Image (cartoon, rainbow, N blue to C red; front, side, top):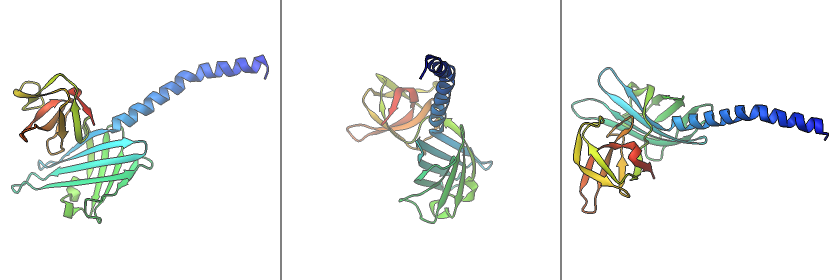
Length: 207
């Protein structure tokens, strides 16, 4: 290969390198953006939450529905699926096998559809577009801050006396909720006493 062709190749690489880097950054950010908790609010006061973790083309999802009824009826689902063209049909070993749950993932929204899921208390009322409300995903977290206080509300103005310390493990369940940098967690100490409240997500790291 002559010097002229080598020089042209180096010039082309230099020209396209920023573009390739930008695409890689954008793709990584998009994949990260899809992880989190999404919410659907209905006009009757009921709501649904979906926690999604995306690893390459593999999806793990937890779903919680609150009916806003006197009986305090709720629904739940846990499943996994393979993402094809931003769509997946979840499979579950815990829920009714006839319950079909399909998800379509976008950057900051998920479109969910439930079919034959009344046994799991997920009727078609909870079909629709879920908007992202937090980067948090359901599961256990380890406390990374030296001290992280509990709050009654996700607003930073209702600090409680109780707190967790670095190394403690807390759990985020969808029935507690999340909002932005605030996540409702439970902590059980060595005496089996449970403490719950909102803490800052930036104080935690997912296990």
